[in-house]
Amino acid sequence: MDIVTLAHGSGGINAAEFVQKVFMPYFKDLMPYANEDCGIFSSIKDMKYVTSTDSYTINPIFFAGGNIGKLCVCGSSNDVAMMGGKPLYLNIGFIIEEGFNIDLLKQIAESIALECKSLNIKILSADTKVLPKVTDSTEAKDKLIFINTTCIGSVEKDCISAKNLSENDSIILSGKIGSHGARIFLEQNNIAITSNIQSDCASLYPMLESLLQSNIPIHAMRDATRGGLSSVLNEWAISSHACIDIYEEKIQIVSEVHGVCEMLGLEPYDLANEGVCVIAMPKQYAEEVLSLLRGHTLGVNATIIGEVSKVFNPIFNLQDSKDNKTQISKTTYHQKVVLHTKYGSKRFLEYPQGEILPRIC
Image (cartoon, rainbow, N blue to C red):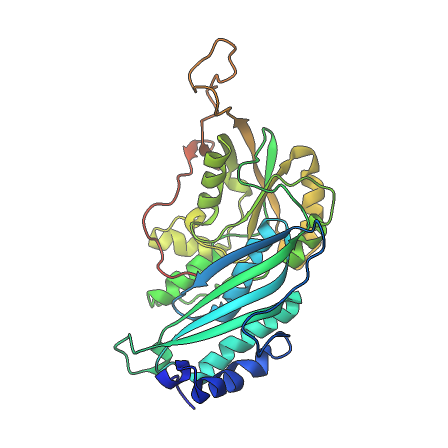
């Protein structure tokens, strides 16, 4: 069995053998309901759970720093962690093109298993489907695979939302940005640049565990994936009717990533990350949050990069009112992110537009 065939998706003996030989050597210890149609997990009264579903179609499926298998677990578990949840369970579905290389599929399954075990996640249910030939290439390595994952977690810290920013909140970035997007851009475009850039693909819950179990109020938290830092901050500014001020000199970028961006005309703030998050909390807790993040290897470069300078009341018109509740000062802008450059000037950090990098996750 060297490649995936249509028979492997038929539901018959070929499909059963396919699952048992390719996936179960890696998943058997993670799937207590492996031979059932679904999995069961217990619920404690008044316990809140959080769930997130995502699909992964990255190209290339193997890249420096990870592969689609590691990425699908990290991506979905990170989404749960961003809402204050501890990842517990995973449902996973594979859509595989006929002709896909079995050895590569085993590598993907192994990566999934390793990441799940590192987080103590159990797989409740899984599914495979095989598509008839789609691509023109005869090379098994060029065939398509899509993975859909649903992660379920228990809520450890509630009331985290993009709508919850408050004036004078500090904005913390957990690490250096742009590595994943830059790595994928180089590989997708076969750019002949000698580079040691690695994707930052990583599960963030271990870094955030002590923070989520603390009494520190977190207003908003988001992993900076598609659209990067720019997308997260603009979404927050719009959702919370806020003005966010960010300081360029505080934002750390891997030097090689910065060089690639300058050479190719890319905006580092728009590049995707798979192991970096942004956190907003009341200013008085910022140093304590930094200390907790820096206590983990993924958070050693955590930095305060800005603050929420104004939150506008959406009930009122944004023109001057009699009680001046909605007066806009010269330095604050409704639903905008203001980037203070290292040269002393200011510009808007705009929402990313168009398709910068296809299939980065």
